[in-house]
Length: 158
Image (cartoon, rainbow, N blue to C red; front, side, top):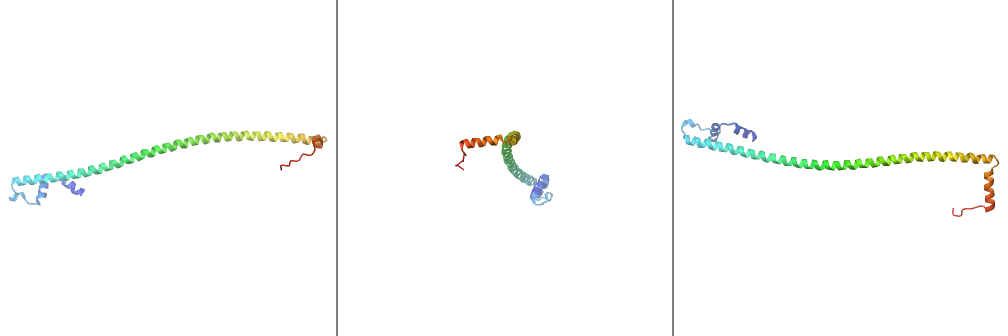
């Protein structure tokens, strides 16, 4: 149909009037000059009305496409806003996790230091206790003397 519309556009008024008359030869005397003029005008009116119809159709299609583009643009804007919100939430969560990780790492280092000190103190105590046993076991004797004076303590809760 669009091809037919283009052929109508490219026709001269004489060609379109000839088309309208169905190929009747004007020079044969069948039509007067007024009739030819009327036929030409009718052909021109038909041509223009088909052009107007075609332009209206194109306008409707363009308007429809424009409406779809606006809808897509609004949808994209909404999606972009949602993505920005999600990105800011993820960024905030990342910074919180980083802070917690650094605090945990710091606490782990402190705990390692405390455990090393505890082990050193335990070794020192073991050396002192072991040294006391070698010297005669004064630590063990002191404990036995206290137990004898107080009596053996039993924990009945266990």
